[in-house]
Amino acid sequence: MTDWRAVGYGFVTQLILGIVAFALPGIGHVGAGLIGGFVAGYVSGGGILRGVWHGLLAGAVGGLLLALLVAVLAIPLGLVGALPLALGGIGIALGLVFVAFLLALDSAVAGAVGGLVAEF
Image 1 (cartoon, rainbow, N blue to C red):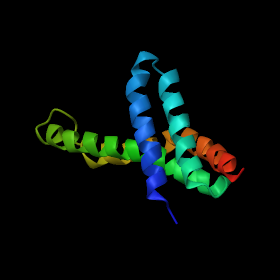
Image 2: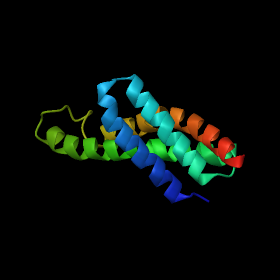
Image 3: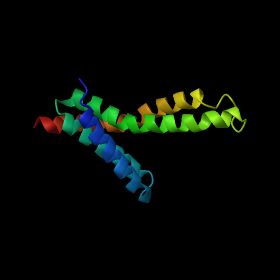
Image 4: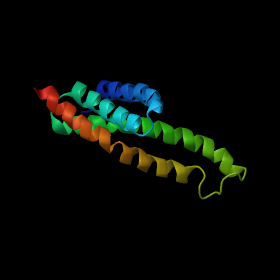
């Protein structure tokens, strides 16, 4: 069962560190994902697999929110012709959902470590 409190802690940690990470582009954002995933895995406890799941969810929640925001902004642009229809709306949203889960893999790995540390 998913511990949404752990996912929330991981997401908020990633959000705060992600904002601070603009001082160190690239490195800072990867670090934010790793630390947020670790927090989610540690708070959820229960071992490696539980940590992987919660770290993945914590990393993906931010990406999914970003995908939703971009899709909402892209639909009107596609309708007025500012974006080609193939790039507007649902196509962008589905692409961003895929990228969100792909980029959440570092959070999942860190969540596994956090779940393992919580066991001890």
